[in-house]
Length: 102
Image 1 (cartoon, rainbow, N blue to C red):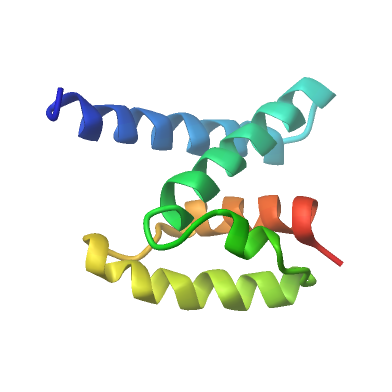
Image 2 (cartoon, rainbow, N blue to C red; image 1 turned 135 degrees about the horizontal axis):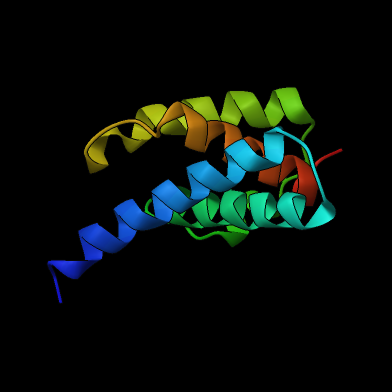
C-alpha cells in the first residue's frame, strides 16, 4: 500500500498538468471544468501537506496576492522534498482566484 501512494501522487500530478494544458488551449466548458478540478487537486495535494485547507480558503486576495502567497508557500514546501512545481503553482493560483479571489 505504501508503494502505491507515490505512484498515485505522480499519476494525479500528470493528470492535473494535462488537464491544465487542455484548459489553457481553450475549448468547451467541459475542458474548463476538468482544468478547475485538476487545479483543486493540486491545491489539496500541496497546500494540505502543511496546513488545513480551510486556512487559505478563509482569505480573500486578488490574483497578485495569491501569486505572492503561493510562491512564498512553495519555499516552505521544500521540507517535503522540494518546492511546488511551477505548473502546480499556476494551477493553485488559478483555483484560489476562482474560489477566494477579489
